[in-house]
Length: 111
Image (cartoon, rainbow, N blue to C red; front, side, top):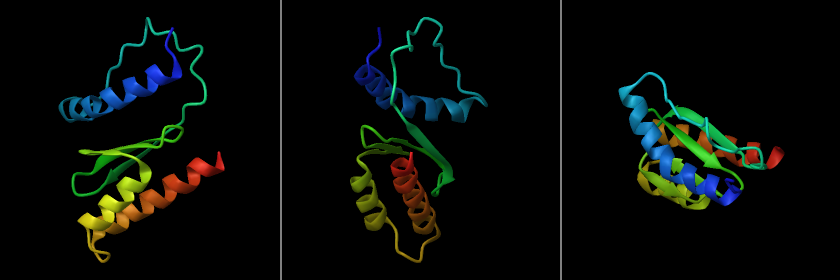
């Protein structure tokens, strides 16, 4: 049986691999035929795609406060600090990340 913690760890490990695989293939294929997902509850993953210089997808696991955004992996607050450190406020990518962060912040709290 897969626990919530095992599923979160699996996602942390595999999301970067899935992102890399997507560059090689049009579709991501994940084999869940033998996975027992019946007891997995209350895991919310939000996704924002096509932002930043690489137009990658950002994943946010709300319950675990985990962000995977390109090569960045960490908490929501660490991600915000990284955005502010990396980009100037008048930069297009800063604006994209700022809007994505605002969306992820509020959508996670409104559920």
